[in-house]
Length: 302
Ligand code: RIB
Image 1 (cartoon, helix red, strand yellow):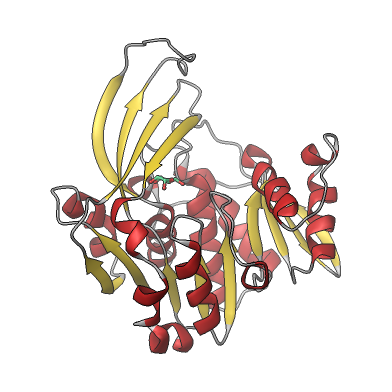
Image 2 (cartoon, helix red, strand yellow):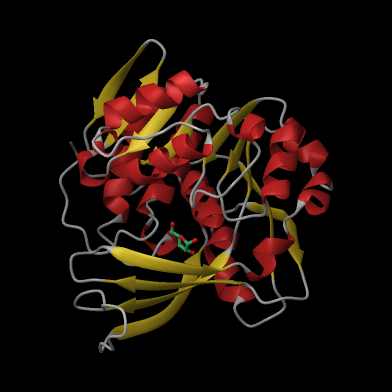
């Protein structure tokens, strides 16, 4: 069984602030370290650390950030033969983390913008051979569509950030993974109106996404856990209670762990029960990939 991630690789420039600045305001902060990130790379590393066999299709630049960006991908044993080194800067994410662990993120795509249809089609054979193709929203829409078109088995999509992509390609997701904010944006992208009260109602959002044509939906609800919804019904999967230090990449830890367990044969619900514990572990450490557990680490209990 194997997973292929077609996605982004970033160098994360993370700063800690007491609170997030208001527009026009200057605040003093700390940190400023460069750590490996990017939603695609984060999810690939999280899956590999949970024991999955993972291949990656993506790109880094020819600058000094390429090496730190690839550090955990290399160490976790992800197959990196599908990564191109292009004449551009490596993707960069500027992340501010407040004292309560919440973050804001600005992404400069750099080399990730090179993961277009032409680049992805060079890996058609590997994508077609994978049991699960895992995608996010940090590569060009044409590359995203080419990956879905090449897939012959399961496609799992975490459209974060929510960018315009081909409707039919998006509806191949099984499951679509999203937080509540992203779920509402996906519904709007599919032409559905989302009432203000519905945008904060996970059950309604999930039901509407199933109605829109997704085979299954997993909504991540932060500290509350996740909602797993299929046409057979929905179930809330509670998260262990932990003290969050840094939520950066927690959703990616969830996505990678979920896919690792699906690939190992778990049901969607069982996979989600494991993934909430991996995500809870991740928020107790700083950084994205650096905070992810291996199979030997003790996960928090619900
Ligand atoms: O989801 C967290 C990730 O978003 C960060 O690692 C950053 O690189 C951005 O892609």
